[in-house]
Amino acid sequence: MVLALLDSVSDPEESLVRAFEAAAGDLAAADYADACPIGTVALEVASSNDVLRVATAEVFEEWVGMATGWFGQWVDDPKAAQSLAYSLVMLLEGAFMLSRAARDPEPLRVAGRSMAALVRAANMPR
Image 1: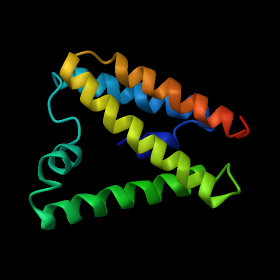
Image 2 (image 1 turned 45 degrees about the vertical axis):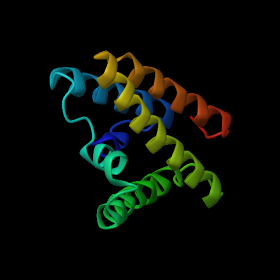
Image 3 (image 1 turned 120 degrees about the vertical axis):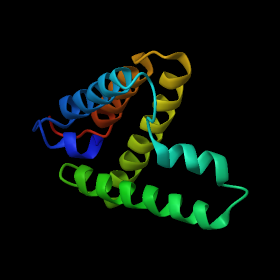
Image 4 (image 1 turned 60 degrees about the vertical axis):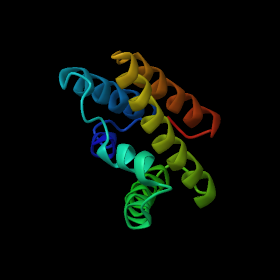
């Protein structure tokens, strides 16, 4: 969902903040249920079911690949684009967990602002 929102605004920082804000709104509207079933399954089965572990790893790898492509629009270095992509997925997944546990959308909003700060630090054009 977040990756689909990223192309809605041409400025990468604003786009990231808006995408995380939309995720926060959607999660609150869903009464904090089902934020990311892939993350939930990955946490539950990573050490007990290798088939599901591999399946969730493949989904995350696909997400990182798509996000790497998105960041690659502004970052010439593929490693830097991939690093930002990992950060995006990690911040999103962690923020989903914190928001669900606290029943508060603020962790997602903070994660969006943090992601925008990472973009600024990478000297991406605005």
